[in-house]
Image (cartoon, rainbow, N blue to C red; front, side, top):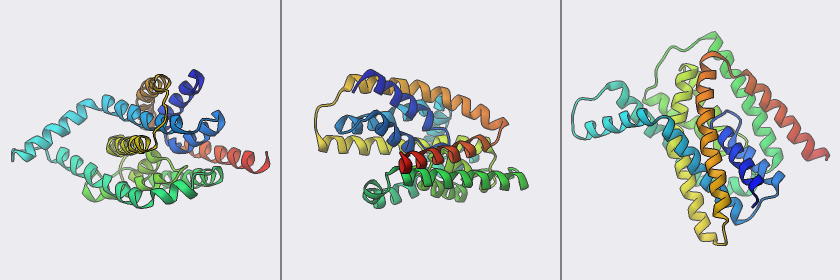
Length: 269
């Protein structure tokens, strides 16, 4: 793996993991464009998931410390803030659907669904999910807060991102909006919900890497991971500011245009 490839893949992962544009789909396309394959490709994807998980942990460190203290106080049977403990439980319950569905469908997805046409189709359909969420949000703006039921339902939307081309952050954000959360609260919950699932994906990929064996270029992978970490920090900060003021319409058009480009290149070139 060359330096150019490492930097490009790091930037792609750092940008797409937390924007509603599908990190898995973009990484599949980037690997094809850069002609990367084999053990280095698997190792790179595994470490990049750790890098972006580290970025969201770093950005939300104070929030996570509050949740950790709430958990300890709850275990010690001390009084806790109800809003904080509800958020903690909602995050735990929201993680379950993707774990269960992911473990039961991973081999099927890996074998049959990681091709450009499927990714293009998923991008196109996800764009219409965003469009529908914005339409519903316009008719009835944010009017509720996160609770356990909404946490589970957002978790089901997160499970959609197991399909290559479906954005994890986008599906959870749209799901939160459809359930009555504000754009900002949906995005914040989406980022916090990303921590266990992206960490789990990284661990699973590393276990697969150990089984596969082979020589890994850890220097280039370290470069890519560093790029992904700092890129993700910038993107998280940017997106939370963006979503306070603007809609998902730019990402609707991005998904439709990208889906068209992928379909055209795949079918006619």
